Length: 200
Image 1 (cartoon, rainbow, N blue to C red):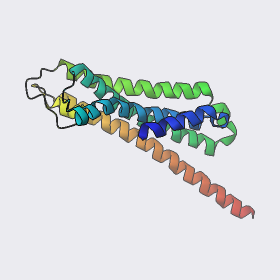
Image 2: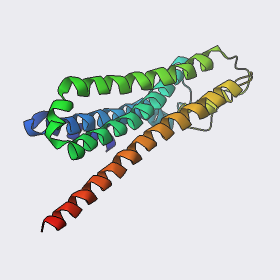
Image 3: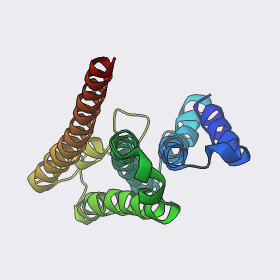
């Protein structure tokens, strides 16, 4: 249902010329960031439930981990981009079309993708270089990063510290940007109503 709904959004935006704008481009990016993690874990999850196939190649496990982590970061970054789009639309509406042109939207999307990839690559590098000598069973239907890391026969503190730093940095910065943008929205809108009432 998730995949069907998301592809329906993509189809509608593609077919309707009036939706070819920054807000809907960011919405399509958000849809892709939602579809990829679902399609990364769904095939293996179904094979576990339907065929009792409980094994996965280590490279496939790392690929699954990369998709989940990188697109989660991209998801957060796209929400910031959408908040920026609303900020420009409300605070400077006359310049919205000239500020957020198609090349600018493409550059923002590229920056979000590169950020997601660059932040996740150290996870894969660390996970691949460690020796594994414990049980190879994880209590999940997909390759969750911390579950895989705990199987290593080495000191994993560097991975734990990096995970915490990325989680706090990405989540903290993105939430801060979104909150600030919406605080500005409310300030501008309340100021606009105040001026309007005075004019009446």
